[in-house]
Length: 512
Picture 1: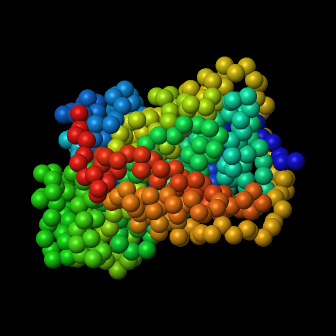
Picture 2: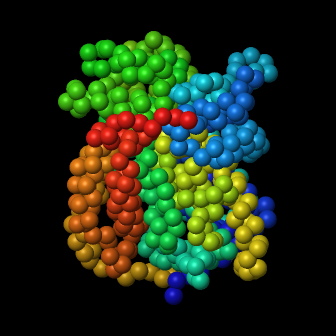
Picture 3: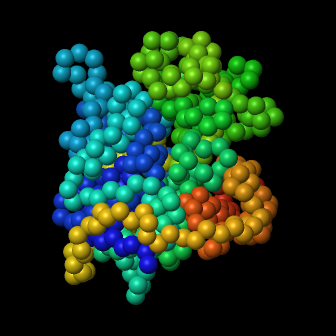
């Protein structure tokens, strides 16, 4: 018999969306926060570019909204964009209240230092510690969650499946790192499990980004939408690990060159290096194809050593560790899978199509990103919609009339241990899946390649119930489910738009 935990609200995931949601819901509800690894791990901690909000004197939420819609290539949902951009300044204020110290301009009483990034019409990107914005946010929110008496945190605990009774989600089956199972019952379950960059052989995402929440929601019957829109960041270091080189570097003036030193983006788009991510990533991919797969170069040498070290300390240290002095030489880069615009379909309060289940952050599809996310809107989405989903979850929990027991923080390591057994053959490895998705369902697609991918994926078997004894096996099951779903969604959209680019149908839908 697996141990059982209780809370008013179960939050799965500990990035900006999950932590914001847990802290907000804890105002009126008991919260159990579970996360697959350490509390600090995840995509939020790695976010370099910053967080966008209309705070400057020459800016406004309406202008931010226009830029968001333009980047989304006409497929953003207007009300979702209005909420994101309109509530953005308040979300920033709450982060500041939680202890996030955003960088300020030099001089006494300096205003917040607002920077420019691709496809933004105004400088509106806030940073903390130069390029360590995500780390600063993660640290502040994580500390606040650990100090909140109404929140119990369980690290190294993965979601196996959602518990559904009478058509309503009432909790989740969980697995600890040692393979033991436990059940968490809650009046509302809020997924904030991030994306699924580990579908692809090249990704800027951390090792934990395996789409667990999206896959579990789909298996429970929740509606998914827009999975074909996977954003590939244009500039990841062309070395193992695909370390992200922030878009903000191009915002400061760095340029992209082919192997002959030619700057190629001005011929592609009038905005050149500051064009939307989908445009820049495709241009790089096409140049790399012409160069037989060799990387292109990010040239930041004109910015100078001092500026690069002070403005981008994290990137500077990583590149120097890789033996690259980017003040003197260009950086070899390649596109890499970065952000999932689709996911669990939700309303503007995070509610999914399945009663009792809510979602926020990258695993949710609110419609705010359309076919292509505007740079630095991801952290903002987690803050704005994490708060809205938390309010809805707490309200739903109160309205159910079910009195949840106090959160149980008992040691359950020995409870419900799964019996080990020899794994049955599945016919594939994670590396094979990632290679297949990169080659055939990646940045540049064709109907024939998508069909070939779908046929191959159909032959591979997920780990069976008897082999789901480790978190790695759970992740593999989720990755195969999502690989099949993403491929099917891509096949179902025959026209190129935004991040979904079909070489056999290159004409794009124009932005509204």
